[in-house]
Image 1 (cartoon, helix red, strand yellow):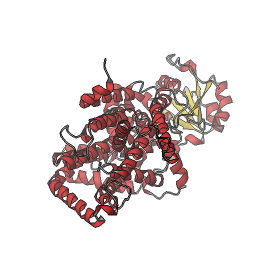
Image 2 (cartoon, rainbow, N blue to C red):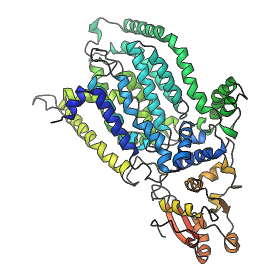
Image 3 (cartoon, rainbow, N blue to C red):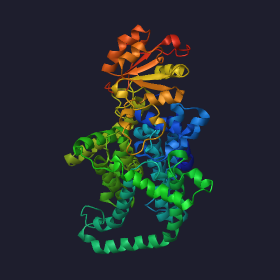
Length: 590
């Protein structure tokens, strides 16, 4: 009889590969079923415009260009669908369990900086099934690619320190270079990684002062200054060993930075195409991709000050963290507590410090308390959590204490046992409620701009209307000075962007159908225009104003909830007599 746990212990590499296959399956199955979130529609729209020749350059409003540039060729070959839009992120997220092999030590090694076989498999399992990571791997956002590339960079860096092989430094540089063009909070990753390195060097001087730690306290004879000198000496040795690999690592990192951040087509100058054609120098292109990108970011609202209430943002982000990654937090917490008692794993404290800094820092840095932010908070805790869960399985500290044991210790064990049980049932329940079912009000992994309704009927009527006048946006909320403004990405001072964002997610569906769009806020246009487009979008009071006029002209009214909590509704008025009859999906009559 096959025992999966025993098989995984004997064949850890095969187990990691099997978990990677499971990870890909969880992310790809039914990937296109969910309606496009507003953020997905925004990024998807300009990605599709780029695929159709509009050019592309870094714009903070859609974050880094890596995901759009990877997605555009898929739009050209497979068509612009929700499945295609999400596929690059799903594949990158699905391959995350492979990073566990970077943290694995050889069978003959006893280096505590790396993971043993059991811990390696558990790390791959956590990366495969953690609900928050799964959900946002099925989402056209740059958060998961940033997290995965950062994890691979961390794995190679740790492996370089543990093995002394300089090639791992170069590989870490490559993945750091891939992380840079994903999203702006790569800057926070760099700051946290530097802080974690400082903690790794300084922690031995603190550890000797802990009186409860095995081998710690004043009875050991070791002093903090001695421990710090020894730690600094080890750090200098590692730095000297790997210094020759730093320059190649930087050059390797520069390749994806220049490739993804260089403008394409008419969106900026100098462009990648001009450099490839020999019309501009490569140094000018690299300067545009690096210095120019920084200047664009620094001038954006994302680099500005934050004025929100810290506790409100923190409370929501920490709640999302527990819902999306409870097993990661529990395992990391146990590993950290265990490390405080008896230090044997050099990675645990620095990576926990990274996670703590992210936990406290992201509520300050982020502009909205979105449920994808905990992906970044949890990332450094994954290897720590693997250590903790294996220690829990081996030590079983929840076993009943002796009758005369201290009551607090018994209750602590009961609480730990409860957390273990809760973490075990948490994963399938949250996965089922978030990534399998349609968007639900109780799904706290979904952000509020996720449409609660299935927008397939809207997509169908827009597709049908593409060859007969397209769509008309009606009302002040959907105003644009002219309909050609959104053909190209907005610059930093674009005064029309706020109005255009109010149209989301409809522009994605209109653009993918190739349907023309027009705008009006004058009811006389609805009454007197000889031929209106067969689809009219209106919102709120504008829909109430347009309703009687369009009904008299034979339009049928359909309402769609565009927000998860029913705070945003659009009414689609459709003249079905002018459609070609393909849109037969049921609709939400109002």
